[in-house]
Length: 290
Image 1: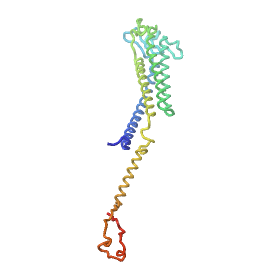
Image 2: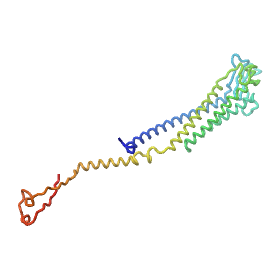
Image 3: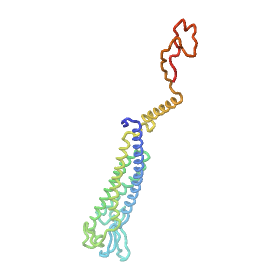
Image 4: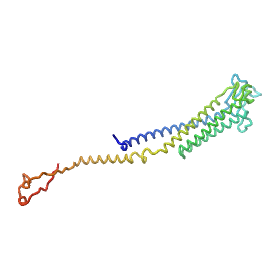
């Protein structure tokens, strides 16, 4: 069984962790791009619902013909009963038919400003940390969504105005549309609220995940998987391989002691000399090679 400090195990762990981290960062970037695209879409939705006067309008059961937006009112002309004439100007709040419509106009306008600032803050990705930018954009999207909610909620409070009753009938009242119906701009505004909530939550999620990845310890020491303990193990294996090659080329020499021999018979093929007669001859070779 391999020990916990086995360099091979650490190498495999670092490889898997590095692969997971790379996949996560790739997916996070893709999600971040989608978040930016949908933020731009939300800005377009915000601009459309702010400009278009089709929040509510007439139906076959309504008293008259016309439709209403945040700051525009389109009704039949008094002189010509067929043509619709739109009234209301942003630079003249007095031309807006109801105080509730004025409040809704302010809320939706602030929502549009907040989302435009959010898009402009995306430039900070090039100069600031990603988590900081996501936090800034997330709070701007929360503000934009909150203002959009304020506009959607406050707009029905103006349905009791005389202009609305002239089209929708005398039974129209606060949050009671009478004989008129809700049109596509109001529905799009409600979708924009949901879009803002999802985008803000996603921005905070991306910011939090970026902080966790940044604050964690590096998965691979010194930024390379061939350094540190893994590199030491690699060098040890190289040295071991070199040693085996050396042993194959130069086999070791084993020295074995020679048994005692008769000093008078150094070899069966040698002759006795005077030196061997006068002194005890000790062989100079006591060992032999295998």
